[in-house]
Amino acid sequence: MESVCVFDAHCDTISRCWREYEGLDCNSGALSLKRTAGFGRYCQFFALWTADGYTGYPIGGDSVERAYHALLRCFKDQMACNSDKIVQCRTVEEARHAHSHGRSAAFLSVEGAELLGCDPHRLDEAAAEGVVAINLTWNHANVLSGAHNDDPERGLSSLGRRFVEKMEELHILVDVSHLSEAGFWDVAEMARRPFMASHSNAKSVWNHTRNLTDGQINAIIKNQGVIGLNFYTGFVGGSQNLDMVRAHLDHILALGGTANIALGGDWDGCDLISELPAIDSLPKLYEHLLHHGYSEAVVQDLFYNNLMRVVSQR
Image (tube, rainbow, N blue to C red):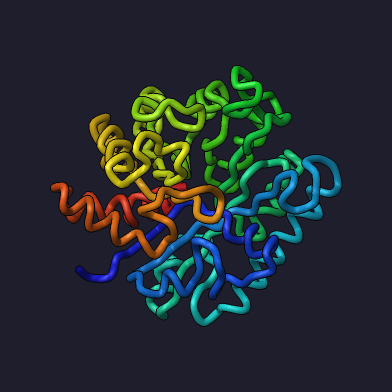
């Protein structure tokens, strides 16, 4: 098999590097440039994320802004230290240019708008730093919306709607993973550009609040967005193996999502299934899908092409 091309929609590796004082090139986590060196073309969304007990900064107030800038510095420092291997990109064209020079492409995201003070005016600053996608919430409700497990019946506030409008104006992808279902439907109703669920699975396969209902999956398909398959044991569910990952994939495909599937491994953010303990195990999933009759074209769309399309259309 030729080298696998990978574009993954979510990892918490920058937060882990900052927390553990490790580097992106080689570390003890699930994602490093050493682990991805064997891929063909490689793109990765790197999320800036913070939570109680991880950074020492509680959620709220000036401390979160300090955390955001510290995480951003960590990301920029890792790009500088590894500039011969990876480069921050804002567009598909920049990613292709990086690939043509033998480098991987890093896209920056923010997981939880609290890091930006839930302030639409801060989005200009984020866009200037190269932020390409933002989750409106993490696991906590905020002034923009409820979250999947915290005030889940609350949708977008008026401020939340202004935040989404500003994101689309700046061509920043709206990421609905972690969002309340009510908030999801508000985004789906008002979205004028493709949006994504960067690391979520199918609720019909495994009933978890972080997974997507069939209605939500259909809405993303209609919007021409993308869903990144998550490899966290709690969202995969069941036997927590490649067969269960395939069950989620099969379900989305059965709903018509061939152009809307992607990878969203959640590397360095959770307990991963044993058969995909780190990103360099992805070729095992690639081979597993081919063995079970998936066409090479569908697998390549899952692994790389679909997310590239959505980034290009944002």
